[in-house]
Length: 250
Ligand SMILES: NC(=O)c1ccc[n+]([C@@H]2O[C@H](COP(=O)([O-])OP(=O)(O)OC[C@H]3O[C@@H](n4cnc5c(N)ncnc54)[C@H](O)[C@@H]3O)[C@@H](O)[C@H]2O)c1
Image (cartoon, rainbow, N blue to C red; front, side, top):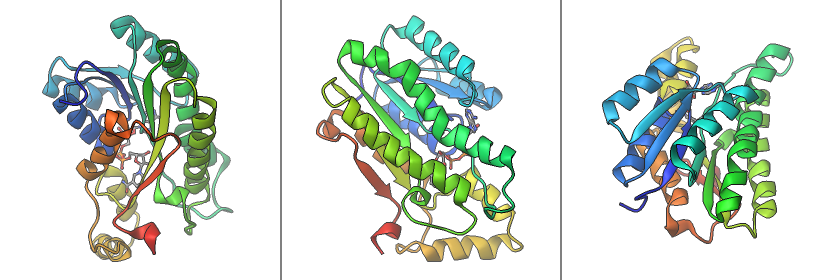
């Protein structure tokens, strides 16, 4: 129970990597607030997991929603110990066919959202003199791919944002780090393979891109997120951890 007594917010915590993180955190003794645009799924997960988990509707693209989530968390707990910026939105499109609306959706969810969450949550952590922020980027934030200009720009931006924030926060007792998952079996990956002419072939192709020969699981990523939330990562500040079965080692 390494997170005993800690209060945590997980954006996009109702499914995939976020939901696995919520489960891992409460198994380690934490309380969690899920902040998700999909409030029905967030509510049913909270109901399933019991009183240690709450849910609030929050579109991380909208500052008023984030402020409401931050107020809710600070009213309920007085302090927030861990913030996981996990909510994400993907796009597979060439740079010239990407619409302004698609670009804004991806950049606003995957980059502006984490900044706004930090803006409204981190000052309270600084005041308390402790806290841990974990940003969920992607291998798309580290290497180039086709059809990835919007998503890759957002995720690459999130890596650099993490490092810049790490320096700004270095003397405050608040840590900020970043996890870059590889190909992980979640709803997001399912939506991506749905777009391909042959779903099974696409899944096999994805497995083939991973040196370990399989996709990762949400639980495996949650383990890395847990590491940054726990005191075991006390020396990590601005760290960028690939959790990708060897993809970026190539
Ligand atoms: N699955 C992968 O292979 C993979 C790889 C690298 C990085 N990631 C990143 O991991 C994170 C989690 O993705 P996942 O695979 O679990 O996908 P997922 O689709 O299962 O979960 C995404 C969650 O974010 C929520 N969300 C989406 N837009 C939102 C918004 N505007 N405001 C609040 N919540 C919103 C969704 O409701 C959902 O609960 C994302 O940031 C994603 O980019 C995933």
